[in-house]
Length: 639
Image (cartoon, rainbow, N blue to C red; front, side):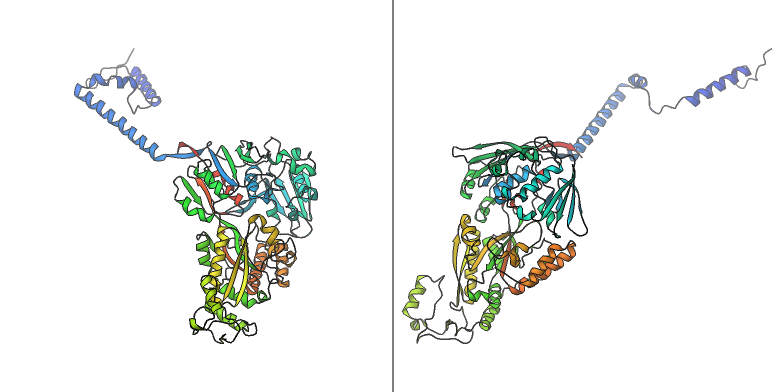
């Protein structure tokens, strides 16, 4: 018999057992089903049935505004976050002065044109970076022993030559042995004299030195040759091998092709991107170099659009090219010092420290830099440059003509030397006819000389105005616009202390054989190209005075020799820096040379090449040190 539950209001009477079952089922369904926050698609399709005509139009208008707004916001985001990024592609053509001959690390350093191209074809154990200095290249790890005599180099394992062969320890051994072998005639032999190189395993090499040599790592920037290619070529035939032009290296670019004219001269040389390069890949697909006999020819080729850039821009052409549209000129500082060297053995007067100091005081370096080098560089006072280890910032020459004149008066006995100053009170009528004729001949370069006779007047006190000729020297320099102008400015400045300069120019081709090697000069104006390391030993140690050495001043000082030797042996940079600062103090005291300015390197690139940063270079080829950042082609990307 069923029992009815009591009726409440209008609620139908339901058996109690059924009501309990219904409540339980409802609660289970509600517990399982998730509440719907938004209408389903089926429900949305019914919207048009429940809205009137006006409401439907209003809904479609609102939907359109929403879509438009989203489009605008999306477009704004893409527009503001889209950037151009470098991509692979593009070609570049550059003009160089000279002819490529040996694109071979054993010989390439002898010529800028060879070094420029070889720097893109070959890689060394170390490389130079304008901000970080010496860093690993083919080397993945470098360990120096405590005594500074052993260098253990571990090679990276992903490097390959352009022919696909892996770069291994035996390639390094072959390259260094070839440099040391006299039959190869490599100019780099002196850098590895007394060095023993041995292979530990396929990727480890050990260099052992007889004595500690702090600058040794800088020698390891030399490019590595593939032993499989060069090992079968006799040393006597090395300079004749076709691989000197059809070079195989491990650098970011590889050889593609070259062309010659009927005389056998190379007219163009093309490199292409090496896709398997172990380092950061370059973007520019091809680089072609074209070669010219002189700057005039290269500039003409640029005018005729045969080349897009120029590897070197002389100072006299820089101002004109700066005005060209589509061209950007870069002026990285280069580790080249413009220096006046005194050959003390050539004339007795040059042995006087006070004379050399007076000449330094009479030299306005800033005017010479601004005029001869268009201000593209820095005035310097020491043989070590500001960005090099051990630079002594406390040394500076002071331009002071009055002090220079006083120093000369205190140093020389003019009467004994039969040299006289011009009395400013002498009138033109008192001058000899010989003096008048000489003055009229060249008023700008010849000062009046007093002939030792009855009309001569000896002046014991410093007269007002400019002194007459009291000293005369020959200044020898390279036949170059920059050097000639610097020499002319020196001549003008030194007249203020009674010194006359006869300027002698020699062509760049003959400069070494006729001037440097025989030390055939009284005062020499030239540029000195320094290396990666600060080491000034080759230019200032007394052992480098003799034929073939680079001690151009013939300077000998036992204290300086000791400082330079100790600096070379010191592994600690702090100790080396201290030795170099003491060395500069002594050089400044003895004044065997006047350091004029550090020059810049003029380089022209088309503005289509982006990503270029060349703050400084050591050698001209270092302008390519960060070529992996250069690009021509771009693509769009969001960031």
